Amino acid sequence: MAFGGFSDSKQSGPMAEINVTPMVDVMLVLLVIFIITAPLFTHAIKLDLPSAQSAPSPEKTETVAISINADGHVFWDKFEITQNELNTKLAEAAQKKPQPELQLRADKSTRYEIIAQVMAAAQSNGMTKMGFVTEPKSPAPAAAPTAAPATAPAK
Image (cartoon, rainbow, N blue to C red; front, side, top):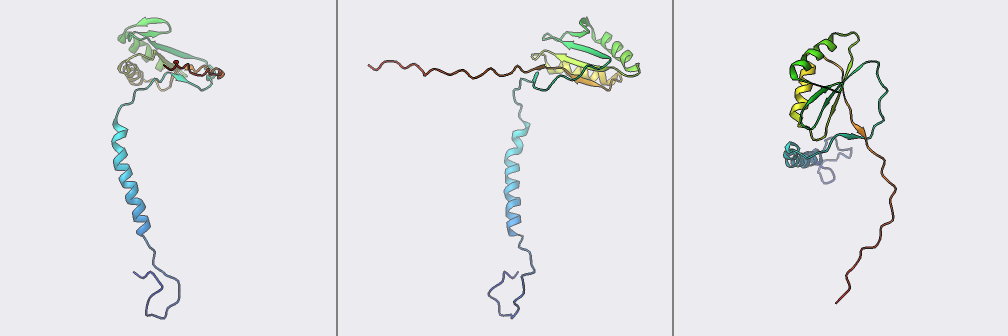
């Protein structure tokens, strides 16, 4: 590989070979970074998901509200139902034309397993439209001036 400058040949033209060493260096650095950071993506992170800051969507013509409280009890439009009743009602709703939108509301301390079971029941019974309902975040209060921290008198 000729890097130009000190050669016995009388060629004064531009160098025609591409130097790939910097590219290989960058790729090796990226590979090391990905190797180090990849295990971090598999660890669970404690999250508090139910609040959102988006504007409420306009109300559709027909919706089905399914609520799940902190104890894992499932409610269909404010009436508690069992898993079998849920499957029956979801199958009936899936047959309607146009199909109603399923709005899923869950307490933030509800076990994810129960939410996943309700979602799986909706999918297996033919529901195709599902939305998650959250409460909008309250606007942050204006920052109040903070007082200087109190210090204990020197002894």
